[in-house]
Length: 122
Image (cartoon, rainbow, N blue to C red; front, side):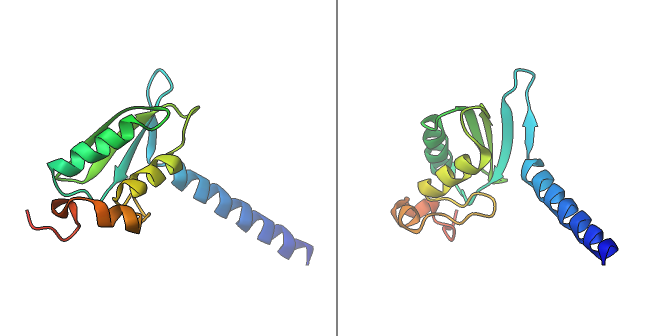
């Protein structure tokens, strides 16, 4: 019974460690301590690029952002002492776009320009 308990504790600890690693896998760090995240979005056009980059400019701790429209990847450089990757993802969803595994806020999505909708033809 004691061996079983030790094995279960080890499995739980390993699972927690793997989950924590997955959360930080999408982050790299600059020499000056800034975090750089690459976030998959649902952006489809240059208007999306403008909207997302402008929204990120107002987020506390975000130093810069750049959306590559073709890949839909938003690269965000931020101060991890002032904000987090999760907060940035939520800010993206509140702008009307998906952010990695988070779905866009429904109200925000309804208010984005028709050309920025996921099913828009470009």
